[in-house]
Length: 377
Ligand SMILES: *Cc1c(COP(=O)(O)O)cnc(C)c1O
Image (cartoon, rainbow, N blue to C red; front, side, top):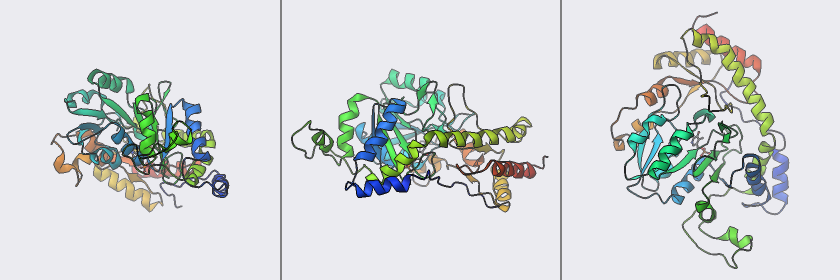
């Protein structure tokens, strides 16, 4: 058997919509399919203003520009995250202040944020790891008290909730990813959600290369020109057409992924009860969008051995982030605080194969292979 870690899922309509986009005569960005995708999010989740981008990284970069991040500003982010969460703000000259993870979840430890705030703190960027909500009540309280902005890194968090509120609706700004490793994909792709109306107009200008082109096409201004800094953040209609085919099948994709997730959990639960492994924990305020299934081993050596054992059975499992506060690029700029939980997840978290077409038999086989490793029946 050969089970990859990820396999992009095609709904079947992608090529058809791309064909339509190509032959409609409008292939550049912000056309019909872009509008359809953006409206989808507005209607389903009530997002105020959505702008498709070429990646979540781009959406985060737009957020940093919108917040006027400048040299000397501090931005608090978890050290257990993807490089882009930090890079977007470093590009504007910010100093990154890394926060540790929770002991029961790889997400940011909400109780350790406030002690990191200084008069220079401009933003907090919570990452909804594995699509599981951070405690946004706590984070928003801190932000409000100190007058700080929240940018949700919702890259993995499509169709997931904090209580009854969709992730991506809780920060001033939020960034989603449609990279081929996420639940809903367009190869590369992303989206900025603007929840705070004070940023809505400028977001569109930054998106359109610093011009007021969008307002011009709506007939709001009679000429368009250079209005602000900006860049080429919007994807072509070809990407949006692909994405729309995926969005139309969101419910089916989520249904399937949850089935896979539940079988992993149910099958591996006895190993957790015996204290051998830890499984993902979903806090009571969070929903599960089945973005990822991981196990937490008891040591780095054990995880390395388990990866090898699975590989010998044809199963590709992969660890996740390396602590950003120890990275070659940012390690020397970090303030030296130990972040023990971050290092713990960096050493022991292992992600199991997860994709739409993974069969339930394959999930059982993967679980059995893990039982074999621990020499359990
Ligand atoms: C995938 C991911 C990103 C980057 O998304 P791109 O669309 O590839 O730029 C950023 N942050 C997190 C937490 C991610 O999982």
